Image 1 (cartoon, helix red, strand yellow):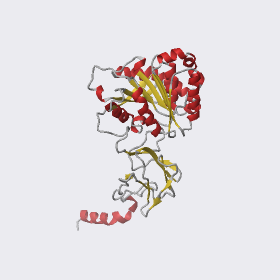
Image 2 (cartoon, rainbow, N blue to C red; image 1 turned 60 degrees about the horizontal axis):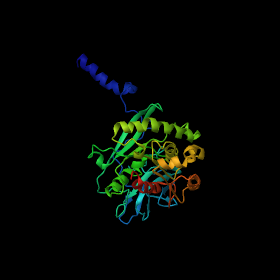
Image 3 (cartoon, rainbow, N blue to C red; image 1 turned 135 degrees about the vertical axis):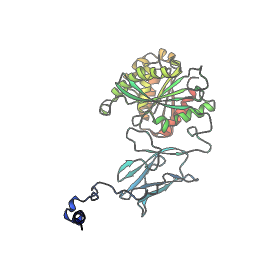
Image 4 (spheres, helix red, strand yellow; image 1 turned 30 degrees about the vertical axis):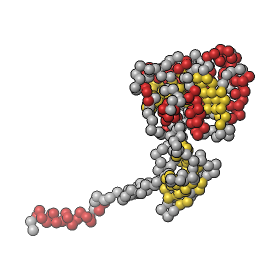
Length: 382
């Protein structure tokens, strides 16, 4: 054997055993690294709606000790049971047609249904959406009628010094009647929600589509702004500060943005301002103090403003009534804000301010507010 062959043979014999630390080996998995599955797990189907209105909910949580279901269709929570594969399930109902929020409580933690892409927009998302269409369709169901367009905007608020979000609905005739200027309803959400909640969960755009198609409501734009004008750190300390800052943003940024980008009416008779809960306080206080800008004002289950916040318009009943086209208030019989709304209505009556008061069944919840919008919209801009 020549010298080169002897050296090669020696190297091959030496490499695996002489210095094993130098040999390339697969790295040890990190203690926190999850093993890569050889195949995807079968997707969980939830919610599963049966023809009779019963609904089955499922959650894959093999290590959970308890899973409960909390839904707006029932006052009590429902316990789920776990099978051998670690999937929890429960069947409830039949549930009446409507749109409901629900959450899973997993060992005490409220969470969305990860198998359901319909999630309610919230500041702290924890609710999924169950939509059971009616037969015949309800006013907030998708129907075979002409539909408008929902536009999503980002804008820079010079007042607040940061980027903000805005949702705008244009009615079906907006594109087909280019010479028309349309009235606008500025529609505000509540404390836990966002500018997207009125469309994603409230179905405001479908409500307007259906009312317009029936000839019950005038074609109008909906503008849904972010009612949280202060930071999360500031707001719990001062809801009043948030409301005042939102007023500045609405009047100095939102309204000018809308009127620069859309064909809308710009006189008070062509603008309405309404809102629910926190947004109801914003709508009532801002609207009543700016009747030169909004002639239609409404509050749904409103966290009504303090009397001193609307003292000026209440002190001038003749002037307020002359400029107001409509002041509309609604609340559910089991709403925790009912007493405050009744006290505010009594204040309006003592001040001789014309208004409409609508007491309905329900709690502080979206089933009430969808119906409020369906009741209010036909009254606007008539």
